[in-house]
Image (cartoon, rainbow, N blue to C red):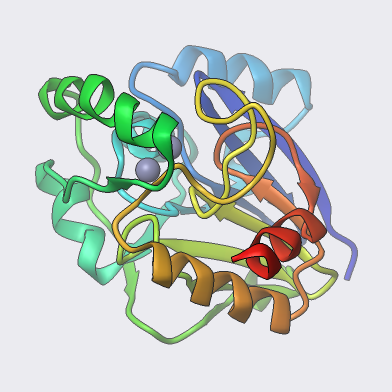
Length: 227
Ligand SMILES: [Zn+2]
Ligand SMILES: [Zn+2]
C-alpha cells in the first residue's frame, strides 16, 4: 500500500491528509477556514469527495472549528473519541493544566477566550473508546489509537511505516513552543508520558504535531529519558 501525506495548515492548526485508496484527514482547523481549505485542496489537485473520513484528535476549538463546514463540503464522516463527542457537539471542555511555565502563564490568557468562541458544531458519525480503529477500508496501513494526556479522549493516527499524527500530544513552534516536544497544556501529564511510551513501542518514528512542523520521535524519547 502506498501512502501520500500532505500537510495543510489551517490557522494555527497543522492538519494532515493521508492518502491511500481514499483520503483520511486529521483535524479540521479553527472556525471559518473553509475558504482556505478549498484553496489549498485545489492547489493539491485533490477533489473534496476523495476525503472520506475526518479524524478529530480532540475537541478543542482550534482542531474542530471548521469540521462542520469541511464535513458538508467533502461528505466525509467524522470520527472522535466517545468522551469528546459531547464537547464537539455542544461545546465546553475540561481546562487543561500548563505543563511548563509558558503553559501555566498562557493558559490564563488563552482558554477563557476559547470558551466564548461560538461556531457551527458538527455531529460525530463514529466514536471509539479504547479500541483501535483500523484504516484499511480507506486503503491506509495504519489505525486510529487512543492516546490520552492532552485531553482524556485524545486520539492519534499511527501508520505502520512509523508516521504518527499526534494532535496536541506534541507541539512544535509558535504559539506554543520554540522547539518541538511534548504539549505545554495537558489534562494529565502522566497520561501524556504513557501514551508516548505506547506509540514508541508501536513503532512511531516521525511525529506530525497538531501545531508546527514534523520532527523525529527521538526528541520525545530524549524528553522521556530526562524525566
Ligand atoms: Zn488542544
Ligand atoms: Zn491545539
